[in-house]
Amino acid sequence: MATAAEVAQLSERPEAPRQTTEFRTSRPQIVGPECPESPFPILLAGPVQKGFGRGGKELGCPTANLPDESITPISSVAKTGVYYGYAQVLPPKDGKTELCEADVRVLPMVMSLGWNPFYKNEILTAEIHIMHEFRSDFYGYNMNALVLGYIRPELDYTSRDALIEDIEVDKRVALNSLNRPEYQKFRADPHFDLSCTIPPQS
Ligand code: ADP
Ligand code: MG
Image 1 (cartoon, rainbow, N blue to C red):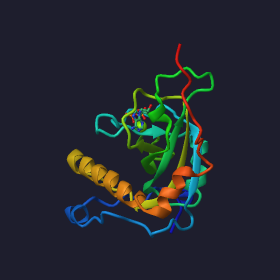
Image 2: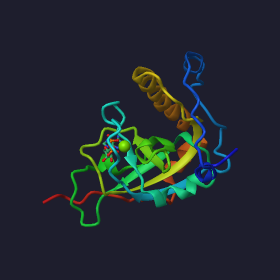
Image 3: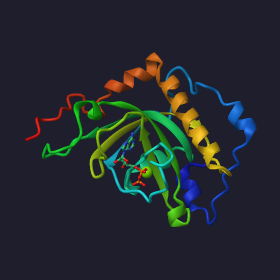
Image 4: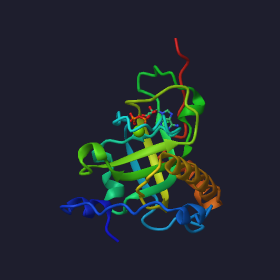
């Protein structure tokens, strides 16, 4: 298997396989072993950056982007594709925020590790969709994530509906897969700030 970082060294990106009806209808509802195995868990952290408006929110799936330098822990050991795990958004140090306590908990997430078309597919991006309704956007906030398993490869979509349908399946598969005792344990991992609170806003 070539890691994402190895593929980044090639002069040409391999084309993503086409999504097919057969793939869509035969997807498993739960993935990965009962207990996370090497290279998982993978720890990621960094400030949330503005993406390139590829329509995350329009697709019903906003994705918080990590900066390039925060991606190495996963791109150096894993291939491109869709992953699942937990993430936590941390309030700013000065304590001023629109977010509430429920927004800064450790929450389930799906992550896409892939090539950014904006940079002619030369730059890898890691984009995290947290399965939670946030009170507001959180650009610039620090985000911690623990990647615990792999869901599927990056695919090339001919229709927007097929993409939306696959994203919905990804979210369900992630929740099912995280809903096992050996995965649940990672909610309390020391990589997260478990005592995170929001001070009263003046
Ligand atoms: P961009 O192209 O800037 O990444 P998106 O449409 O993907 O735009 O929206 C991502 C932004 O939406 C995040 O940076 C974050 O501030 C906000 N956001 C709101 N809800 C969520 C969520 N559930 N998961 C991830 N990001 C969210
Ligand atoms: Mg995004």
